[in-house]
Image (cartoon, rainbow, N blue to C red; front, side):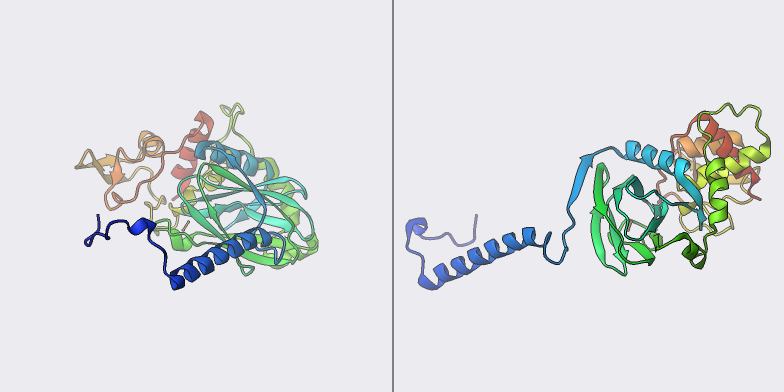
Amino acid sequence: MSLIAPSDGWFSKRTAKDERIWILIAFVLCVFLFIWMIMWHVVGKQNPSNTTYKTTTEEFGRLHDAYVQKHMVGMDNGIPVVKPEPNSDVILMGQMWRWSPVLILQQDEWYNLHISSTDIVHGFSLQPSNMNFQIYPEYDYVLRFKPTASGEYKILCNEYCGIGHHIMIGKIVVVQDDSELSQYGYDPNTFEKTRATAGSADEDISGWSEAQLVEAGETAFNIKGCNACHKTDGTSEIGPALNGLFGSTVTVTEDGARKDVVADDAYIALSISDPQRQVKVGFEEIAMASLELSDNEMKQMIAYIKSIK
Ligand code: CUA
């Protein structure tokens, strides 16, 4: 209801001439812009032609973990590095608060890039080429593309996604041939070895040494993105730091009450599978997503966290 009611029969009244002209201008402009929405795919190549599939955050997360485990060739600041084959399907995951993996691509080769988020909406902004997409959870956004210029590209998040938004920076490196890798800090001689040690999900690990468990646990820790929030050098901006954690006494909030608990195997396992049950004092405002780990991964992860002095 409006404050002043229009007079009776206003709808069937003749429209004034200047008003008709404005309606016509607006209509022509709409049609013009609509045609250009389609034209931008062709002229200027501004709107990429993508395909989108329905997925779930869990499914895409599993896809990412399996993909990285299989193809990983190294680590770059705690983020796995993958060097995909030309013409293959490439998985890129946005999550609070990182882009994973780091991609090494070959110039002038085609790739099928699958992008999705495993939590909330993120913004994919490739710099300095200034390509921008919104990355939605539950949708697998597939873009077939060919990098045409070598160099190092940064993926910035341009959709505000919480406390770690500003640190959510990913990387894509495009090279003409492998001899250029060293200038970006990668050593192709170590690629094979890394690939061989990454996978371990369904193996029988009962006979593994502590060192093997720790190594596999660290890989899982990085692949699953725990390191985006949990640092191991004592800095703890987003999540509690993990160095010196094992065996220490932690003050937590449980059901609104504070209490001291000893950080033992059970505490670490609980903090991973049900992170909101006992929250370390000071971190109540930041909810960690619970992490589904296989028994093997849990064992490896606990071994790794224990080892961080
Ligand atoms: Cu992700 Cu901002």
